[in-house]
Image (cartoon, rainbow, N blue to C red; front, side):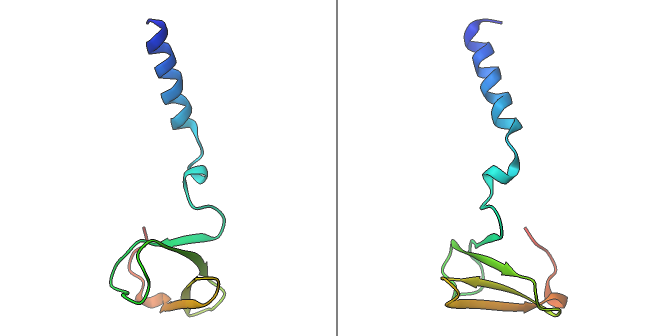
Length: 78
């Protein structure tokens, strides 16, 4: 293996070894990337609030906006 291939292999191995947490939003953050909620702009960052026993809330825009959905209505997460 020549020097270029060795360097490329090390770079690829390093990227693959990065923890997925470094590639995510981090911490408690979540992002609404788009969908059926026209009141929330696409690619809006916020946090998921799980303190309520019956609903999951997405809080965004510095606590100015939120959307709650009953846990029983959630069928999948990505």
